[in-house]
Image (cartoon, rainbow, N blue to C red; front, side, top):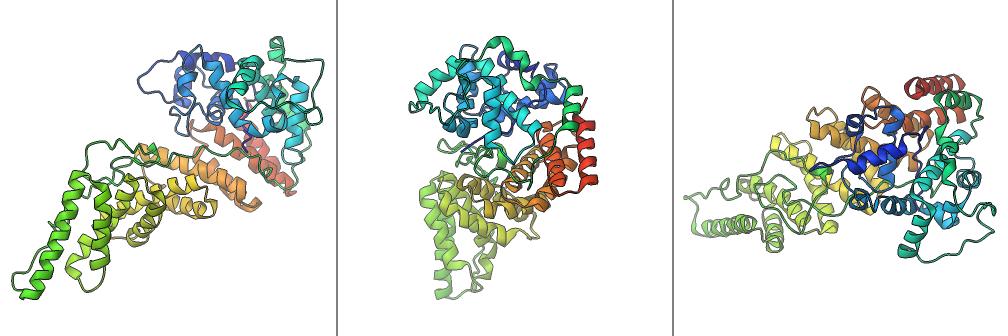
Length: 475
């Protein structure tokens, strides 16, 4: 189940930011820190709204439109979209307390304290619960009731579960400014200094960590940069992997020549070779992927051996095209081992185009593993991608690597031990400290590092970590 950990230190600008985003009109919308700054909201705390909108499934990790974005941008359905996002992002909370949106601020906080008991500091729980309470206030309990009735099975609230204040059947809109999120930054600093850190092991509560939205298991028409120009109507690959390396424009028949001196038997075999390669090129040109896949398999099975050195490059291209074709057919289970072969075969290739294809295969494989939620295989793959592509200066690739870093951090915080989380936090802090982008993740990494050092009784390091956090976000 999902439980968002997004929080705002101060929610005074929340309503205005949402209103500005709803009114913002552009052909291509990407809600990110640059857009918020353009709209006049450059305070680091205001930028944390981006993380919240991601968790509410309004935008994806790239800031691009996600499930509820279209409703969000229509003023008459904005609150309904946020209500849907709330039910998704706080699924575990609503599962335990179906009427939590009708509870008082105090009871809301008690519910979060119960869920995060022993796993989060009092202050962080205060901010997380305060942010939830603020969004509920903005949306309205009635809107959430209506969405629950539309999209969820009707569930009666059990009085034995919810720390519910019977005197308050609905949240009073007049108390918005009383939310914990509206603390002044000076109060924030004072409270952080006075708070006892009760995180004993620095780990996340099992089953309560918000899961990153998984990219759809689809592919773009030209995932490996071949010379196709038309769009495949059955496939639309997430922008995570739309980098276009050196195209493999050369057909397999062009790089395979017959030897006129061959005897009759050998020549007959050569004609078969040439026919298979030409058939493959023709099917590729005609985009008949269902027929191309078995033809490529036949080429690889026949000629991927030392008996046919003249076909070495043609076979290499067939191996790459096989993975591409399976992606285009959305046959992910078959594409996964095909991508693994491309990676193992060409990751150290001296041929630049093949080397680049291996990089693309890594990105495609990551998308499939994310869909499968195969954390065990994802972690080393993320590390491999980072080591391979982290120094790219291309803007598009820098953005992709930012996303890989954030996904790796989220994965390690779910599955890693304290030392691994500390290492991942340092990597993320180093990447985003001097950037105005992804301030939500910078804040998350800095506070996570401080909490773990504190829990490990590394007092001097923990104190320094808290000081660094406050110097960055404390005003």
